[in-house]
Length: 158
Image: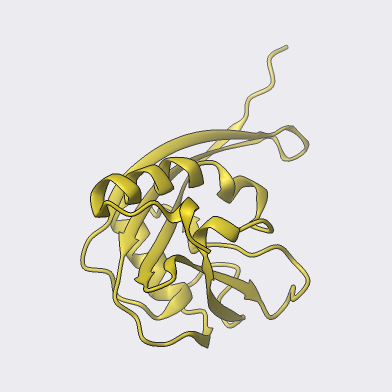
């Protein structure tokens, strides 16, 4: 007998800003799990929604930031046999100008995080070590893209 996994489509968004010291990545800790690894905005794609729209919506709900555009980075399938689920995640990138270094946002929307508080911070991209395991997947690809696009080698600074 073949076990059938339930497929869920997800998005995750790398949000970066350029500082004189180098590239920074927007990360957060949920107030409900302050000792967890850093995370990036992410969530489930809703019915009749395309992945790119979900990335913009999830960012607004989780951080309060309104993104004008996002670029596709890659996609990854992750299996969770204990829950009989497979998550298919589309990763996106957005570069923004943001003056705030740290803030707390009450999560909006109707997901399981609704009402939780997320504590946001910018961390140097090349020093990210405690990022939630599934969010690490495309960091190298993102750094290469930033180097090519902006002619800046973030691994030589810091």
